[in-house]
Image (tube, one colour):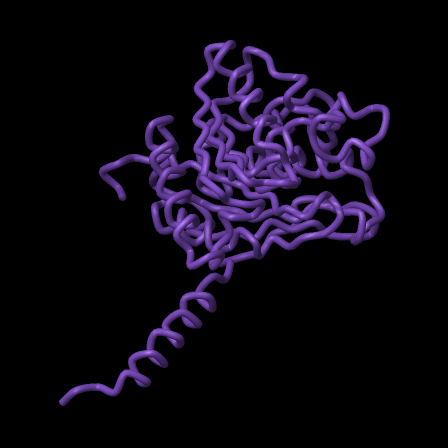
Length: 280
């Protein structure tokens, strides 16, 4: 018996709804108490003592121009990578709307998240030497700063806040007048401009960027890659023709860019030793 097309259509709609509903963290944990607020990590994957002491963790920081945003932006990415065997995390951090803060506090909170994960690695069942910072737009800036910028540290300073790799989606990496956010940051912009603070200890990096991005100039990430390669640091730059800002998000434009970027992200993580091909 042939199934009417309308029922097939409804089936796939419901399948999509179930998929979205499944993007729910296994647990949320407070990693920092500040200004009367508990900042939380939204965790995907098994938590606790793990037989595989080599398990990597990736933490995502949402975009929103340091003004707003939600950790839900990277729930799909976290779910995807947790199924690959990683602990995947989407982090909260203070923004202008939530706390009246500046980009400097965003960077501070990003570093606090990395530090907390490393300090609690035994509790979480992860390798403290396999932490990846990731994010999109202003969240990509926060992630990049954890791996490049000095200062803006709080908590147990005996524990490093520096990740071992970076995965950045149309990131703000230049806060000069030639980049993004200069007016929001002010005269001290260079202190948190990743492009202007690259050095030989910058972690290997994977970047995704659209050629038609009118928010964060493509040339910024091209210059960023050039500087990293000059320091002999691996930096992959994947550009997407005619793609605009936020092109990589789950559900955007039919999801093709999302699928392609997460697959390339996976290959990068395998190449850098954070995922094992045989376990996929």
